[in-house]
Length: 216
Image 1 (cartoon, rainbow, N blue to C red):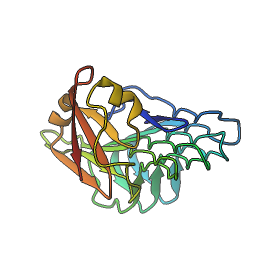
Image 2 (cartoon, one colour):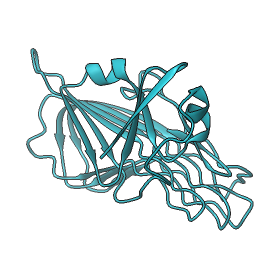
Image 3 (tube, helix red, strand yellow):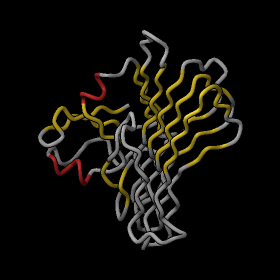
Image 4 (cartoon, one colour):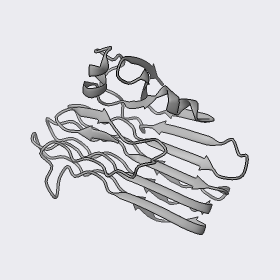
């Protein structure tokens, strides 16, 4: 998830969502505009069938005073995962002069997913002042000895404000929004990583001292 406000903000929360966190509100958020997404933890013993929409998205901002809210968090644990519905934790759009909210976190732990054909959406919101960075989708096959921890970073074509990180210090972690910030230790745990549709991944071996950027 990304904090949001006058410009796209920094990222927080864990990819595997060990901590369930709500999305944060955009700058000047009210009860109707710029609120952050909620949080949902689903534990289903047998079959999780999604044919509608499960959503914890941030709300859109308004005008020049309210930024878009960041997406929330949805964690699902089940044996069989099926359906053609949608799981959504997208960031809210920014106002005329405010940044958009970043995408939230989705994590699904399952043993069987052959009949899952749905959509997983953790995109950042859009704004002429600064698009929000993609959130993360984490999928883990819990079958014994399975080697299938998958991380998906997909911004659905909502691009970052620039290709290069201007500030090559810790300051960039706070000020360079529109990206997905993840430590290298988290990435090393993954068996598969997909970075698609203008998502921007910023990798840090030590978030306090060093930043390396990969663009896809």
